[in-house]
Image (cartoon, rainbow, N blue to C red; front, side, top):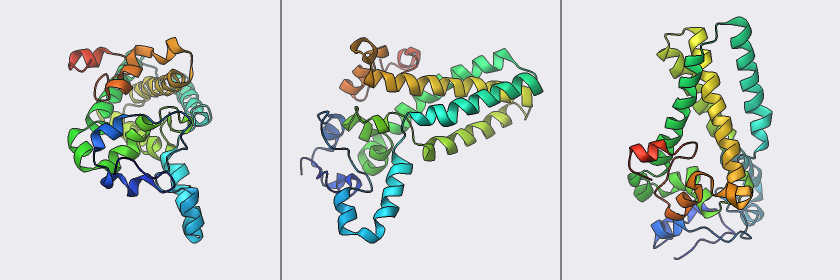
Length: 232
């Protein structure tokens, strides 16, 4: 099988692809219908009893429209910054460390999770749902930012980890989180604009080079980690 049938959920068909590595890295034309991972209209028509469940999973767990940055993450960052400034001691060094930590986490997750060679070969469904659906449809506006079902649990885990690292010192922990969350917001908005903006913006830090080379140029916020680890 050289391609999937877009009328049926993609995750049930990936094992039938004969040249999975090549297929996963080649983008569909812009006017291709959106890939459904769990739900498609044809599936809902055939199994109407389960269609609302599958549709909810599809929307909540696989799609992240850009408005959630303005509705969830920006208010969260504003509230966090206000609290740090009014109720606790702000530590600029910790905020800077949080911002820099984001660039490392972004690179590490992109390279060693999303493009993990073992997962890419043996867990197609996982890497496709997490990342390569974006490689197949880089113009899908609802998959340019992470869904809340993914970003909120990861954000909670990061908050706990930062609290442990700073021995639960509220000033340093919350200062670090303001920098980290700011880095995430900046990344999500820049990534969205890099796929929807003018050509010079779409070439932002060689991100189109990543889509063309597929397994290179993993950094987006900065190219320094690609330089350090030889993946530029």
